[in-house]
Length: 399
Image (cartoon, one colour):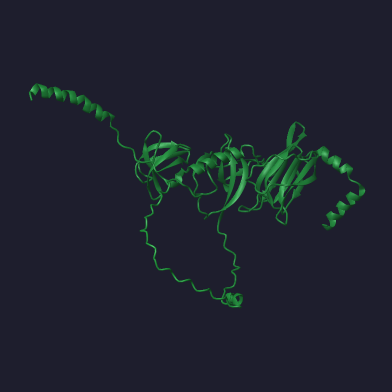
């Protein structure tokens, strides 16, 4: 072949080789699952080590493809194609992400049980568990709404997640056995049970174990709602209710769990709130409050004084309150729950009937119409002498 022709062939092939080299891309690893970034900012590391260099930062809710797994570490790929490693506790599966969005939607219209704040940065978790992802943080003195309360075993296993779909097991086909031509003999009849079978079964049986199972340590969690509508769980011990100190000083060592303004009293140029609060003796209780109290402003002494107080109860959220009215959900001795309703008549608190209340504090609650003060007066006026004597008798003798 002439040399000139050989040079022309090589010169024509060079651009094609260059173009092929530019267009070739490394093959991406196969996706084995999907997840979402849990924390507000998640560092993806170059290797399986939290001290390894960070190669990318993703944010809460960003969708990630899982392309590898080694024990409790996952290799993920971002939407931009960057791959890095992160711990499994920093990831949320699609089910968790769906529940978190549903939680924000369900709590959007739930009544606030008071405004709370914190003295330091506080992590907000996706679920009431220390092992769950912390997706936002409450800043120091930032205000949030208290929605619900829950006590969880500290040793409880974290919610099960599905980050990587399990591969179906391939069952090996068994060699088909040829049926025998000789028929099997019929089975013998079953023996008759002994007449004293029940007595024999009790012999040697260990006595029932009546030792109570140790409960172990628990964590007290509060469901909160931020100003921008995000909802999540925080440790209750890190929150404090933002009720004014001139009322909070009467807590007598109890923890204030909720508070509400029932109206205002004018004292000269000042407007003083009528306060309702609920309290609990300690953390870790399986109810939301054990007492409630109404404070009114005394125009004579220029201080807050108790208008109504109730102790030794088992109360549950939500407490419903507005100007001149409130109701609380209390548990009776038989385990049923009743919503007791009250109205303000001046500075006095009067009962206004009972209604069934919701069973759990975490369910969305439709605001219930409270009995108005005028309706309470009308109902009281209709009662005859015999009715009033009967009620007095029941109050004295509990019958």
